[in-house]
Image (cartoon, rainbow, N blue to C red; front, top):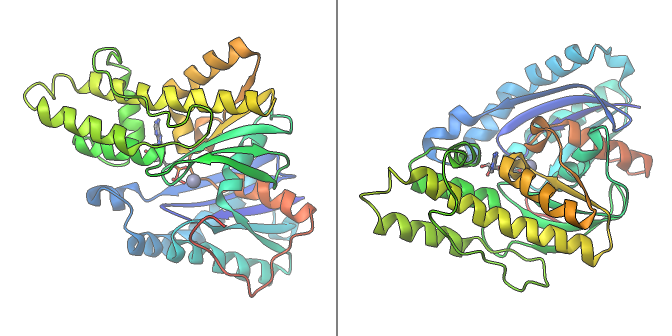
Length: 331
Ligand code: KG4
Ligand code: ZN
């Protein structure tokens, strides 16, 4: 079954062609970073306008690169939520019209289920049931995943998402937006032992997170070390990153042990963090747990993961109708 996937929930316009939820024929991602960079965050109105400009060329490119004819497409999958409503509506309306014109089924899918399914686009996917850590700019949650479309939230952040904390600390350090990748690269040059920040575990036996206290601690450190801050910038980045990574790794390994799972998936934009990838692999090795993390391209928002979950939803009989609408918050 050949699916066209479409994703426009935030600041990436993406389209992909995927076979049977496993094999990527093409995956095109057009980022709007340069549009939002100067505002230090995503401006919803600008995001919608950019999606409108990009959607036709991005879908055309995905179809061309996949080398398939339109008649070979079996269905369309599109992100329905959560995300920015104006942004979601561009992809959603486009997908409805595209499927209607081609007279093929279409299905609206959950963006978070998309991230979790991103590991199935890699050669060695996890076995069900597994636990997954989804860490992105908008979410930080631990899931117990029992099928491609069935997952139970074991815990989530009570305030900022992990990616949001990276973005805010980057802003405090004057490093630009989005900050995750910049902090990650800077941290490689620093020593995490030189500037210690608190690890906020909350209840160690549960799976909720909190990053706002850590963010405040970094801010206070910057305010009280204004003279030396620039010289110490790599150490501050490394110290902050290590505090986030320690907590994320601890919680996901503990979740795997609690649910007796031999497989862990780490997904979402923050899964691109090299130190997080390394630390979870290290910690899991001692416990005999297999770690599955998508390649860098599939950690951030993309449409291949949307096509993957769409394939499984369709197989389970969920076809959307023309009355379906988008939603902004996790259902
Ligand atoms: O999944 P994603 O692309 O979009 C959302 O659905 O939110 O995640 C974006 C988030 C941003 O907050 C970004 O700073 C963070 O992922 N991120 C990283 C890295 N690359 C992206 N965080 C830490 N280290 C990275 N290397
Ligand atoms: Zn995302």
